[in-house]
Image (cartoon, rainbow, N blue to C red; front, side):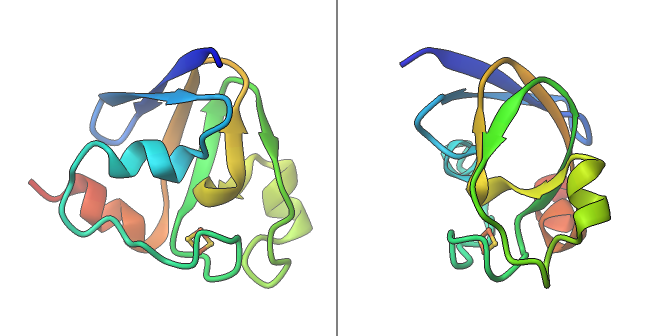
Amino acid sequence: MPAHTITILDTNEQYSCNESQHLLAGMVQLGKKGIPVGCRGGGCGVCKVQITSGSYQSKKMSRARVTRDEEENDTVLACRVFPQSDIQLKVLGHLNKVVKAV
Ligand code: FES
């Protein structure tokens, strides 16, 4: 499985994530304290991110968490997104505070 480099634009951190692994799983491996475990199933919305570049595949997400407009703007749930290329993303919501914490 090819691995891709994911860049968190908020902090300029990078991590590697392969195509069979969702973006949240890769992020957890950064070892940051407090990355929300959440449901990892596209239902709770804690792992919301905006993809600013790169291609990906996404699985079904709760419409209550990601509106159609958001999805069209590449705002997605990291636990439902699998990278197809290198990706740059911004972290939204609760996860943002965690990622930015030192
Ligand atoms: S962890 Fe619940 S939506 Fe991603």
